[in-house]
Structures are given as C-alpha cells and as structure tokens.
Length: 123
Image (tube, rainbow, N blue to C red):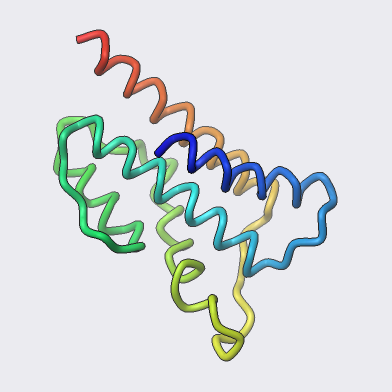
C-alpha cells in the first residue's frame, strides 16, 4: 500500500516540477495517496476498512484506535471529492488547496505513517 501511495506522490512531484497536470488530476492523485497511506496504517493496526474512497471514514476508523491521526492531517478529508465527484467533466471546477502546501502535508502524513508502522513492527 505504501508503494502504491508513492506512485501517486510521484505524479504530485511531477506536477510541482512543471508537468502540465490539471487540478482534477493533481487532486485525484493527492486523494489517492492519502487514502492509501491511511489504509496502510489501518492494516498495520489490524483494522478492517470499507472499500470506499471516503477519507473521513478512514480517519474516523483511525480515531477509534489507540493511535489516531494528529490534528494537522484533519483537513485532508476535503480531498475525498477528487476520487468521486470531480472525475467527470460535468462536476464543475474543483477548488484545490495550494499544491506545494498540500504536497508538504502529504509528505508529513507519509512520515507519520511510516514511523508508526516501523514502531509497530518493533513491538
């Protein structure tokens, strides 16, 4: 799951390096990276999750564990529509947060998840 998230993060990095990538596609890969990182953490905790793209649902599942996400990641649930609503042309224009700031936040989420998974393995 972490490797698949990294592939989505590669798209984000390509966009920030100058590749022409629309907000819809950038947002989709940002959402997918977050979703996969959250699911990786849930798997490491032995928590089952639904086959859905709702980031808030995944965050709520983590909140019910003894190791919830830090508050700094709470706003990432706003990316959920990029996995569903904004995938069609009829959906209108998405409002994407600053790409660079979003990338930094996803990078911090990856670091958090990797640290927690590594700590779980040492137990």
